[in-house]
Image (tube, rainbow, N blue to C red; front, side, top):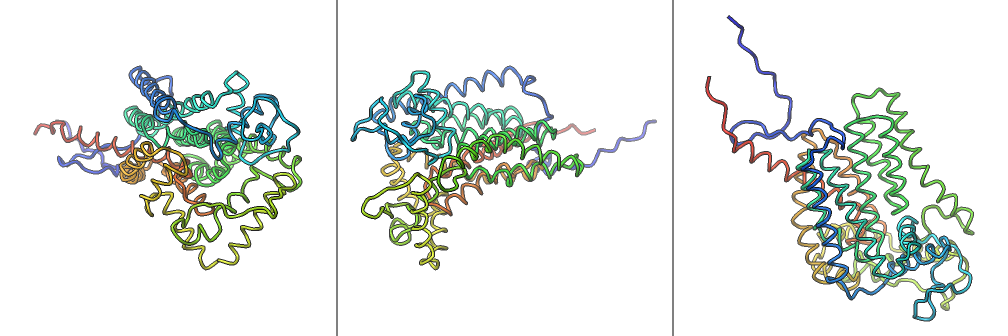
Length: 467
């Protein structure tokens, strides 16, 4: 007579379905990409193709009347200058009056107004023959399409192939992704590089090796060249994932932290060194901080209907602009600091408004109009983006809780949100400054949908027969 078997105690924190059985919400066994099912690969390619179609529709149909404005002018012309062999010089020489030309006019000083990665990408497109605005917009569409594929792979790493396909499907149609691809702004590159960081972070969590730690550092270093504030992800994502690896010894954690730091320095160091020898005053990642602060700190943005936004707050005395970008930036930086110093009592209110605006909880209707008119995102696209965001955010919050209960690291989800919040608090609250957090929103929402799907499957499954 055999002894009765005793069931092993359940250790999962997954929620129970109505039948009393637990819903499995943990990640799947780690499998390399080469072992992905054929169905997953085919479906991911199909979803990415749909995503590319959506972006091309926006470029040629949905926003075919697009005109350059603001930072898009800088990026487009910087792509021209780099494509023509003039590396990171002020692209203002490409204007002749109000008419853009394809010839170089005179000597221009060095520029680092924005980090270099997106300009380099457009410069490569120009060097290959894509000089027009439309060519640059189409090239940006491929950045967005790559983000769709990367998020699909990241979702697979987190919770399985179905979750990966859900994440890719959301990214393919999410307007806060594809709008940027048609606007000639660096947010397209930011979303892609942050998506790669999330993939590297969850790869390191699944397989905590030195090689994966190195690649996480490289991913962060490359992303910093697209957006300066993303450097905070070294502390908010890389450190928690490495330190939280329970299978590692203290010595191995230190080694992996050093490797991640080395990957960051490998890419960021040359750009910083290049800037330090080009300008009269120290410039590290970019020379535009003073300009940003000067548009965010004045009476127009501290009081009234434009609270927490940006405005034309500063003009040079007598219209004079002297010195290189570092010297010009120092002038406007001083002006911004002086204003902040004289209005310290108002700063908490302004910062709160900025943060509330970036997350669309303060005057969302006004934000919608500003995105459509001032930011130039079109009314239809802005409405679609806002509606999708309102739908996804509750799912993302629930998905973050799901991941936490499943003991899946949530620092890659929360870190980009913290970065976006800090950036808005220090500058102004516009939706596109939320771009570092958008990939995390998509992944967390996909995790929530995956758990709902698993719960439905468990409830539909017949219970065990009585002995």
